[in-house]
Every structure is written in C-alpha cells, then in structure tokens.
Length: 180
Ligand SMILES: C[S@@+](CC[C@H](N)C(=O)[O-])C[C@H]1O[C@@H](n2cnc3c(N)ncnc32)[C@H](O)[C@@H]1O
Image (cartoon, rainbow, N blue to C red):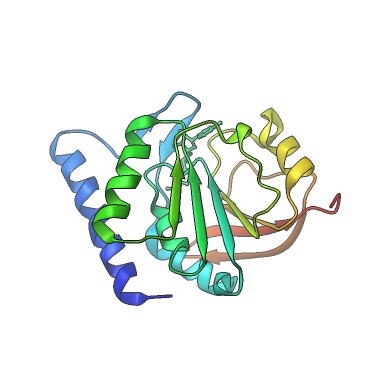
C-alpha cells in the first residue's frame, strides 16, 4: 500500500475524466466486446485493504478498461495484470502507468478469454455482461485463487461466495471455486 501514489492515481484519472467531459464525452462507451465504465478509485482501494490484497502476489483484472483497478492493485501485489480488448483504453492504461511510474503492472490488449487465469491469486471483475454468457465457464474451469467481483449486477451462479461487504454502498463479493 502506498497512500501517496494512490492519491496520484486518483488525481491522474480525475484529470482524464475532466478532459473527456470538457470535450462533451462521458467516461463511458461501448467497446469491441462490451461496455466500458470505470470503477471508483476510493471504493476499490478500501476493498483491497479489506481483503488484505497485500498478502497476495498476483492479481488480474478481466476487462481492465483504462487500467485504474490494476494500477491500484499494483500498490498491494507483486504483479498486477490487466487485459482489455479496446485499444484506446489499453493505450490510456499504458500512458497512466508511465506517468505514475508504476513498474509492476502489465497490460495486454486482447481478449481475456485467450488468457489463462489459473495462476492468479486474485481475479478482479467489474462485469459488463451476464456471467452465463461465457465468463462463468472460464472461472469454473480455471479459477484456483479468489474472484473479487465489483458491483450489484451480473454475479456468478456456481461459485461460492466467501465474503461480501459494501463500500460506500457498492457491493464487493469474494468468491472461490469449489471445482478446484
Ligand atoms: C465495466 S468495464 C471494467 C473497467 C475496469 N475493470 C476498471 O478498472 O475500471 C468492462 C471492460 O471489459 C472489457 N471487456 C469486455 N469483454 C472483454 C473481453 N472478452 N476481453 C477483454 N476485455 C473485455 C470492456 O471493453 C470494458 O472496458
């Protein structure tokens, strides 16, 4: 954890969203495979403290958008990975990583279905589609660590909820896979 870098992350993304709004654009758009909307930095930072993410080594965000959750996770873990299909958002993630000088984050511009998650301690998802359309099958086949799910919507049906809590009214749920 590093409160100073976290404040810089928040500031950096805040300016990005302000720039978009100034151009008349909302920080939300549809992408090649789904829909982008960012997580709230403070909520995620609180949640990562609560789940003691610093005790884990590896983290991956499936659909990492502009990279915010990954860069925050990189303050806790040795290796934080983000996979995003949208090239513009992927480039923004790299830009923010370089600007903030966070070396232990890695971003990939591809489909998360083509990337194994079996070696990750924590898999993060802020889903933009119902899990039964495909992601749940991947989680059941590959998840050996824990899933941290952000939001009230699109929950998995066949994983085991181990913990759930609210941060500023937003729901975080930690799931494990009893298949593994
Ligand atoms: C609700 S946003 C999540 C934002 C992000 N986790 C954050 O930290 O703010 C969902 C993202 O998943 C991406 N996505 C959806 N399906 C995907 C896939 N199959 N492979 C890669 N990215 C995908 C979308 O492009 C979108 O950016």
